[in-house]
Structures are given as structure tokens and as C-alpha cells.
Length: 207
Image (cartoon, rainbow, N blue to C red):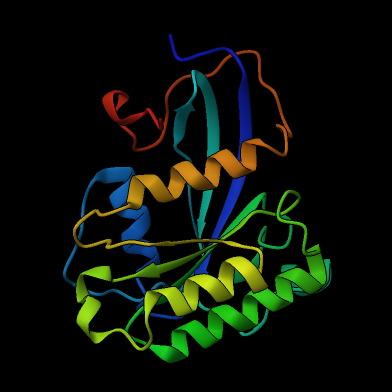
């Protein structure tokens, strides 16, 4: 049995081009990594289901191409098809490349704009900053601790580093994200649900 309490959460994955947003999502869903880089040009939505602590949750994971700014109004959100659903997401994953300073600056800007629009209480709007490409550790632009202290102490966000290529800390990332999001309570409860999306039954388990 997969559990009886079902929640639905929308997760927006944001970041500059080439940081590995799609690669992270694909590793989580399909245990797959492609060495061929294909830029994300339109918003793409994945709808897997996962189990956390015996309860089943629907996820709506939005793979969002780079957007110039975080939408501050509903009108701005709907005028740009890339932004639709982003403004009211349950949680945010902001991805940067640990070897690229500019990608971190973009995350910094988007995080600030989310805080201005949605508030800064992490219990209300969970945000996890993700440093991808940890396998290129020797090429990073600044020590891990420097970023971690800034993100955790100043921004009050979660922080994790991962490698989409080697599937390192990918499951942990979504575990931490879902745990934070579940703490806010379920927005929607359904009487029943089947495992859907790309997660196999033996992978539909986030412990």
C-alpha cells in the first residue's frame, strides 16, 4: 500500500541556461542523464507521484526556461507562457552551476524577487538553492562554505550541492524539498490515486 493521505504540490525549477535544471529533473524521474545539451525553450511540466513517510503525494514539477524576472503580478505571469504557474508554486528549486558566477548572480536576483512577491518566511514558501555540477569541484568559483553560509544564514533558504551527471544528492534534494513543503500542509486531498508519471514503483519512495 502506498499510504492514504495524498497531497498535491507544485515545484518550480528555475535557473540560467545550462546549469542543469532539466538534467536534475530527469535524473530524479528517469535515472537518466544525457551528455547532449538541449536548451529548455518552453515551460515543461512533469507529474510524478512519490511516497514520503508512508504518504503519497502528487508532484507538478515545472522545468522553467530562463525568465528575465520573477512575475510580480498575475497579468505578467500569464502574458509570458514561460511563467505560468510559477508565481503560486508550492516551493522553488533555484539551480546554479558551481563553476559559473553569473549563474549564481541570476539565482540571487530571482531569490530576492520571490522574497519580495511571496514573502521571506521559509515555512510558507520553501526555497532550496542548488549548486549543480559538484563533479567539477576543482573549477568552482568560490568555496562551498562561502555560499552555504550566505544562503542559510542571510537568505534563510535550504542549500544543497549535487551532480546531475552522476546522480549525486538528487534524491536527497527532492527529499528535503518535499519534507519542507509537506510541513506547510496539503493544499488538495484526493480520495484515491494511482502511481503515475515516470517514477517506477520501486523508486516511488522518498525516505
